[in-house]
Image 1 (cartoon, one colour):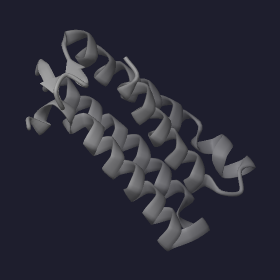
Image 2 (image 1 turned 45 degrees about the vertical axis):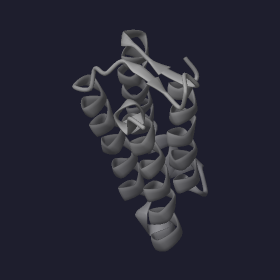
Image 3 (image 1 turned 60 degrees about the vertical axis):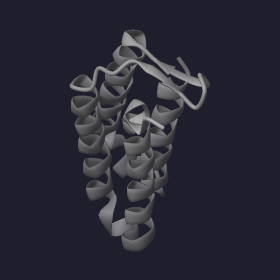
Image 4 (image 1 turned 180 degrees about the vertical axis):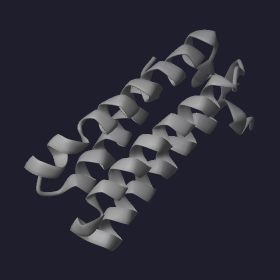
Length: 116
C-alpha cells in the first residue's frame, strides 16, 4: 500500500480534527486562533501538495492520482484558505460558533479534493 498517494487527503483529515478539537477544548475565546489554524493549515497543505507530484493507483485502482489530481490538490485548498482567511471578520461578528464554520470548511475542502 502506497500511502504517499493520499497524503494530502490524510493531512486534510488531521487538520479538520485539529480545528474541531481546538474549538471543542478552548471554546468561544479562540475564534481568531481557530481561523488562523485553519487558514495556515490549508496553506501548508497547499505547499505540501505542490511539491508532491506522484502518480499511480491506490486500493486496487479505487483511487487514482495523476497530474490532474495534483492540480486540484493545490487549487482547492488554496482557494479554501483564502475563503477562510477573508471571512474571519464576518465570522467573528455574525456567527455564534466559529469553530464549526472552519471545521466544515476544511471537511468540504477534503470532499472537493477527493471528488475529481
